[in-house]
Image (cartoon, one colour):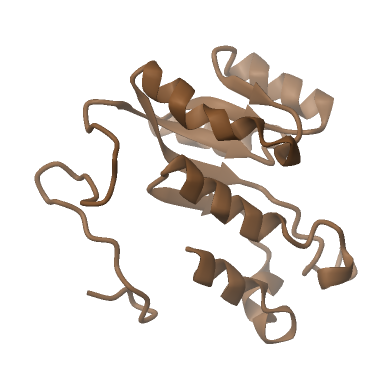
Length: 168
């Protein structure tokens, strides 16, 4: 089966809602990991839908402190590129939790007009792809990523949207 855009569809067992390739036990609590968290708006909105945020990564201290205030039991990482998040999957599985959703607000300045569309010249240009790779490493089922109009609209100029699709 394929998705609407022709890419391969991810199959789920209708009874367990578990991917045939997924290693998580369906008895695990579904949780969220938020990368490039900012003030935690994704986490806040997902908690309104009943999903608990179990891990937060944000480099800016004040924003991270706000996220941790809202989710004091969450695992905490400061810098995405220190790869502290790599231990989250195992740590959470030990607690009976599985990262089903990765929410991420990676820097979009590489493609946005406000960020002067620096593309590859901007040191943050790999954040989107690296976020998708982190989600795959965590075994997530859903990637919820912040978007700017230019990400898809001007893909022919920067190729980031295509690159993200290839990583997924």
